[in-house]
Length: 121
Image (cartoon, rainbow, N blue to C red; front, side, top):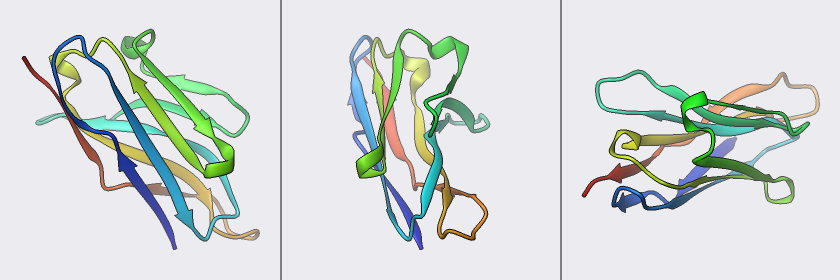
């Protein structure tokens, strides 16, 4: 059993900052990648940023320069530093991880339950 737990969401004014955290726990052999997606009302879930075990980054072009992703491999955690927040950043942010639960298991996608980020004046 693999669990992803997010924290750090909340209400912030435009131009403000938030730091999201996600920690994976349970039966984990390895984590190939961890990252963040978001889903705004009426929109599809979209990529925010993902970082692989090799340190490769993939992120939405529109967020580069404002959002920074980082990982703590020892804690099986991933973080998202969000600066200069805009109202259009309002969404539920979901942690995602590509996890091998055991040595012989294929990597599987796991999702957290999400944390609400609201940017409003």
